[in-house]
Amino acid sequence: MPIDRYSRRRFNSLIAAAPLGPLAMKVFAAPARELLITKSGAVADASTVNTKAIQSAIDQLAAGGGGTLVVPKGVFISGALFFKPKVNLRLTEGAVLKCSNDLSNFPAQRTRIEGHFMENFTPALINAKRCDGFQLTGDGILDGAGMPIWELFWKNRAANKDFTNTGMPRARLALIEGSKDVRIEGITFKDSQFWNCHLYNNDGVLVHNVHFQVPDDYRQAPSTDGIDIDSSRNVTVDGCVFSVTDDCIACKGSKGPHAMEDKDSPAVEHIRVRNCTFKRGGGVLTCGSEATMVRDVIAEDCKITGGVRIATLKLRPDTPQHYEDITFRNITSEGPASGIINMAPWTQYFDLQGMEPPKSIVKNLNFIGIKGTYTSFGTIKPNPGQTDISNVLLKDFDVNIPNGKLNTSGVTDLKLENVLVNGKPYSV
Image 1: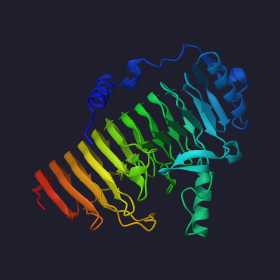
Image 2: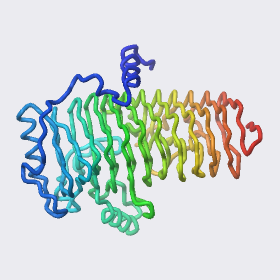
Image 3: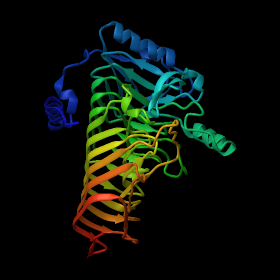
Image 4: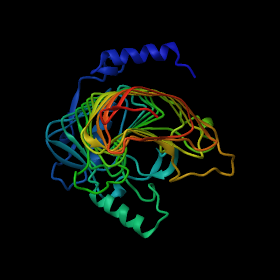
């Protein structure tokens, strides 16, 4: 589907306005009023559960026409919080808003997770639904207190090989959905129990100078994706730092044989990632594990300082997928990074539901200006008989790879221009 002129014009205006991005439009500006959470009874003693006090402050601001909820210096424990239109959140320097480990403070509800809505799953710490112009800013920390939750997850996984990612309650740090012109800036997402920042069905989001992190010495914090761009449009990720143990940025949508008919899962499109640093994680950008339509994506001017792959495109055998116009440009590894690309069948979870295997398309995939050291070149191969892969460009490479071979099959029109591997011209 071509990009309509309005969407293209609007997105270009957001990019031109960065780093302010969507906020420069000032269409949904909240009142200047501010309210400290301590004014409604929140206590920074790192033990009191302040959910009721903080929610009361949110409701008070909303009743007065809006404003900014302010978290001062200190450690404030809370359960799920639900923001309302024109109410923003700012965490001052030294402020920590920390998840309770008693997940009864996150009452199960209908929520979007892994490509569908679940009727009975954990909400996030920060929930903002239909909150146009929502701002989550400041120099403070959202802390998921994830360690005991991760340990319980691995214990359950060891006891039951069929244990799934949603097999136990786990809170995301932020779920923002159905909103326009959102700004997330300056804060740190730390030790999330599940995904860090979940953006579902939004139009116009700027994530600027945000850090996503888990402990460097923890083996694998499960499902700690940095940003999940789920069925959203016009998203800019600028100047962020990722040190997680799952996908750094994931483009997500629906899944299953009927995914194209899923009205709750519009395309992921018009995505820009730039000036970011990737220290640890599964990949700079991943399409999947559940994704249908992903198009017009550019990741550029980024550096990798640890074992992070550039691109992962998961090809589900049960889902009709369409990945189009995806570009990685001016990416430098100071690593060695994990690899450059892995586009291959992904069969960890799938269910054809008795249907015939669907057809998928990958086209106009570009890697331009790739430099540095990588552990592997990678793989490009289809689900046999299902995936049409075409128009793949590798251009202006100067990379060092111990095993400098790109494993490819089933690709139409693979082009290599000025590709140097280990100092020598490379061809397939």
